[in-house]
Amino acid sequence: MEGVSEIEQGWTKDQLEERIRAKYEGEGLNPDTFMTGLLWSKPINYWDYVNLDALLSLQVPRTVFPDENVFIMYHQINELLFKMILWEMSQIAEHTGINIAFFKSRIGRIARYFDMLESSFSIMQDGMDMDQYVRFRHTLAPASGFQSYQYRIIELRFTDMVNLIDARYRKDYDDTWTLQECFEKIYWQAAGVNHQTGQKSYMLEDFETRYLPKFFKNAEQYKERNLYATYRQLAATDAIDEELRETMRHLDRTVNIKWVMAHYRAAQHYLNQGKEKAEATGGSEWEKYMHPKYQKRIFFPELWSEEERANWGQDV
Image (cartoon, rainbow, N blue to C red):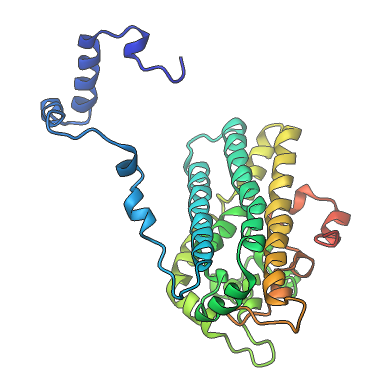
């Protein structure tokens, strides 16, 4: 019975000890060493289990404004959710003999995480004092949410590289492009390159210096194991049910339209303020970079009609 220990299902203490001994002996270890260790181990408590003291010490504001704490904690929560998403993606990629049932359950988890991310942006848009934000944001330059390396890895694990290429160059893409060529044309370059001079911003240079090798590694590792590739492999051998297809469409739209637009509107709320448009802290042309109608970024293009792809992001 799920959620009930074996001893509650009728195992005796002797049977339980026998199984414990068999577990450690099967791993070539001495069970007496581990059982003796139980004599000296401390009981676990909640605050130690979740490392609460360490977690609550990670907020280090750079200014005197109280609402900077809201800004910091909100982004830290996002990064924890990104880690959860990456964990689910790793399980899919590494699962031996993956089947539709397992794939569907993990896609459902990822979709729920992104639903939470999308719905949470009211914390950013309505949860900070405008005067405080416009002051403390100047201390953040040149940092930018653009530099979330976990989110960039999520994108690389979602879909084929061609679907992450800047819309202006996507039609020219072919499989002979090297990873270096792909990353020179990947869509997020639009946020960090001066297209008149071709010069990269400090924000982008710093980001790539730190993380580009990790991006190359993930792009290579997930070339045949990303979510879209796995879906196509399963669809080639099994009947894909409509529920899974709709979950993937929901996920695609949530990530690439709804969540992006929630971020876009929050940025618009604080940066424009009904006045002359302001730059993002990283110096990016954030409106053209963020709005989905420009990039038409779609993770699972085969799940959408030609008309839906053409009109991507136009209805928001």
